[in-house]
Length: 76
Image (cartoon, rainbow, N blue to C red; front, side, top):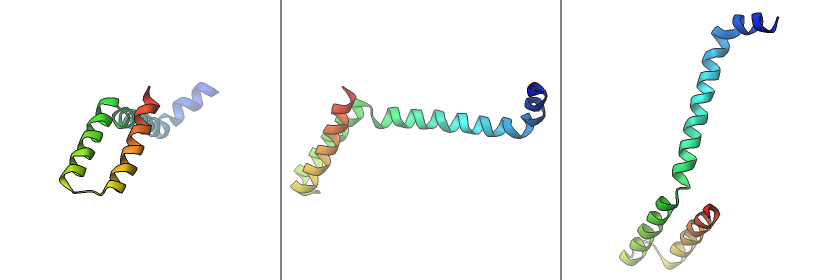
């Protein structure tokens, strides 16, 4: 009965399962990219450049730097 039910529900359930699988793959790739240590260090360097250019205040820099450093620390 289980096999028959699976076969009969395949036209409906198949595309849903496929969509969920694709969504999980996208989520995994986004998480890897978001938490990549090299990308985080690059963001930290860009943040320092903004501070030196006067685009952000010391307070904004400190807050953003703390968030980035915590994310980097979480990777090690």
